Length: 155
Image (cartoon, rainbow, N blue to C red):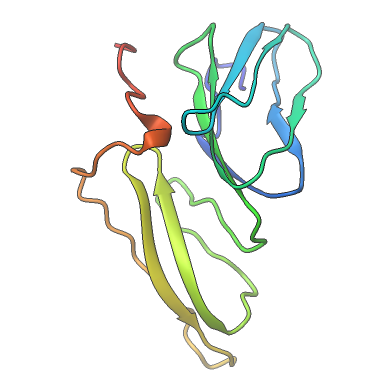
């Protein structure tokens, strides 16, 4: 969590079983880190100012992280057992390098609009154009279960 009081980045990716910091911080403000995975709460833990980062291990799924003391601090970690993944940039674009040739099911998840899937075929050869896929969100999709009522009560 950043000194500005913003939990950033808003979404991160993690290849399981590689554990990583669930809540690394750069300030001395106390937090109460709360996680949700669907209807389950894997943990809620106080993190006093100056404490070491929390390290937890999860299996596949979308983990929502919030701070019970600062309700505007929210983020997500997408945990997967597949080593090929990416987190998109601010403009929504992403690149996945060195993907072996083959047919793949590609998934995109947005905290406000949920999951979209597409099939993509990666071909071999230096002359080949990179495989491309476009995910489009209409803005009318229902909130995903991982994010139900995410912004409710914040304003």
